Structures are given as structure tokens and as C-alpha cells.
Length: 271
Length: 264
Image (cartoon, rainbow over all chains, first blue to last red; front, side):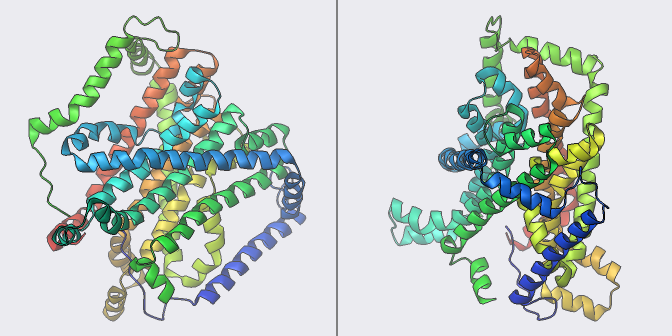
């Protein structure tokens, strides 16, 4: 369990505002340094373009339909994969939790499949089924299912026994127990699983697009590399990062309203 | 946590073993004598694997370099991530200064760096190692920062009253106390490093296991594609197993303490 230890000591902590200001200063300083280094020709233009060039490339990209189509392709397949992963992981985790037999029988299978890098399956899947959206979805789901499944199984196991006893004493019905005890206990784990899964899903989506040339950010990256347009490659890097930030930010935004009762969120509001 | 009753010895082996053994046996018998182009017999796949990778020269020409690049890349990420993490974790100003950049790189899907790293370093080991470091260092760094930050306040006070040197504080107080969280970062970093060694060899190498799988697929060598995929699976599994062993050893005291105090 991640423990939340709050530093109440005024020393060693900064106010929220000071943190934000320093962050903005750090970011601006870095970009300025980069720009100066580029202008002074310390960085070769063909290897690392100046920030202004990258911004220009980003501007040119953002008015093309291809670019938005690629962004949409990558985003939509990642979101669909997350839904599929939840649909697979929730019943599987419940079956593993409910039956000792299922838990032991699937133990080796899951422990073996879990560390297999999803990208390793790209060549074989291409060979067997060709470059289709279904294959892309399969690769993403296969590669990023495990963190979610592991977290769910772990979360189900950590439901406090006292709470279950209490539910029995109060004669909770099945749905009441799910709603009042199971879901609240498992939610923090689900969000952790989601955060790791979505990171890996995005990696596999981009790699698949890059290698196979299917529509998406990955194929745009491959194209930029092929044509040797470095400023465009940097602009796409920026977009990929922002996309990653968007996904992890969405998961973080979910935890606010979903876990408002959890100690970590309460501390955040008070602190 | 409720006490779990785990059956011992043979019973457990049987319980855990029956499904994988059945599946492999099914694969073996169903694919035996298979004429289907894309599904060669398992026997043929395994024979090719042994001939090319264990008896043949490939373990030296492709497997060892892959493992070496992986080890250097992951090792560098661990050292760099932990050292910088302790530094930033202990200095709130530095941390705040770099926070936006760190957050960006942590969320960045690292394969987006391929064109740039390839452009700077070209094909080869340097590119492979750099891509691993650029992908795996961020979760390690950020987890270390979080771990160092959450070192108990009381512990800090006590340390101050004992007048320990900075170095003593780091090795005897900060690192052990942040250990579990740092290792959680290593685990995510490991996962990413395994993905990236495969990816970097697929797109930026002329040998290695990742190159072999993609090359086999493009040349339509179906049995070899199966061999490479299975081998990648086995290696990913073994690397994770070794890592977990090390983790359990290093964090042994922590696990014992949890058992002793009953805290979860």
C-alpha cells in the first residue's frame, strides 16, 4: 500500500503558489536556454531545431486534417482499449478472488503472460491477421491488461475484514455490499491500475502505428523521420507528451470526485 | 488481510501446474503435423528455437548483445533516477523548478523519441541504450522523489537531533525508508525498459532479438517469427523473476517488519 505521510513541518515545504511560480520559471528558463543555444549555433539545426522552429512546425501541422485524424486515431483506440481492459479485468479479478481453485490454476499463466512485452507480439500478430484496427486493439489490450488485473486482484484482497463482518451484522444485501464496501475499497487500486495501463497502452499504440504504418501519431513520426523534417518530429514529440499528460491528467481528475473520502484526497484539500 | 490457507507442496504444484501443462499439451497435439501455413507444429518451433538459439551461434550474436544493452540501459536508469531523485526529493526548490519538465517526460510515450534519437545517434547500441534510459528513468526518478519526500517527519526530527552527516542521513535513513516506493518505481521502469529494448531493436538495430522477430516477419519466415516471439516472452519473464528476487532480498527487513507489526 502506498502510505501517505504528510509533512506538517513548515520547513522543507513550499506554498502551492511558490511551487507553481518556480515551475513556470524553470520551464521558461529551459526554453530560453534552448533558444539561446540554438541561435548561438551550439545545437546543430539538423539535429535539434530551435523552439521557435518547433512551434512553427506545430502550427503548420495543426491546420492539416491529417494531423487531427492521426491524433483522433491514437486517442480513440487507446480509450476503446481501456474500456475493453476493464470489461476483461473486472470479471477475471472477481473470479480469481472468489475461487481459490481459479486463483491457483491461473497463477502461472498470468505470472508468465504479465511480463511479456506487448510489442513483442506485433510481428506475429501482423503475420497472422494483417494490419487491421482489430489487431491494433488486440495488441494494446494484451500489452496493458496486466497492471489493471493485478491491481484489481490486489484491491479485492485488501478489503478490510472488519467491514465485511459489519456488512454481515447489518444484513447487507448483495448490491448493498458491492456498493458500500467492495467498490469503495477497490476504487483506489483501480485508478492506480488505470494510470499504469493507459501509459503502456499509449506506448504500444504509437509503436504499432510506427512499425506498421497505420494511421496515428506513430505513423506521422515515422513519416517525419523518413522525410528528415526534424522540427516536425519535435513538434510530434510535444504532441505525444501532451497526449500522455492528458490521459494521466484525466485519471488524476477522476480520483478527485471518486475518492473524495480517501485520506490522500482529504489531505490534499486541507493541505 | 485475512489469513490465506495455501495448500503445500505437491498439491500446490498440481493446482498451479495443470492448466499451463494442459494448454501446452493441447498446442503440441493439435499442431502436430499441421499443414496450416501460419501455425507450424509446436515441435518444429521448439526444434528451431534450440537449433538456432541454443546450439547455433545466435545466442552469442543476438541474445547477449540484447541483454547487455538492456542491462546497461536499465542499470543507468536506476542509478541516475535514484541519485537525481534523492537530490530533488531533499530540495523543495529544485523540485518545484523541475516539476513541469519531469511531469511532461513521465507522461511522454517514449517511442515518440525514436526519430530524434535515431537522428542523433543512428542505428546501433548507443541508440538502443539511450532510448531505454530516456524511457525508464522518469518513473524511477519520480517515485524516488515521492519516497524521499514522505520520509516520516518524526524521523527527520530525530535525525537532526542525532547530528548525523548528510551522507549518513541518505544511506541510513532516507534510502531505507523510501525503499519500497523506490522499488515500485524500478518495477515500472523495468516494464518500460523491457518494452523499449524490443522496440529499439526493431527500429534501430541490425541484430538482436527484436530485430530478428521483425526481420523474420518481413521475410515471411513464419516458424522464426513464432520462435522469436516465444523467446521474447521467456526472457521478459526471466528478467522480471530475477528483479523480484533482488527486490525481496533488498527489502527483506521491510517485509519482516510488516509481518511483525501486522501493519499492511
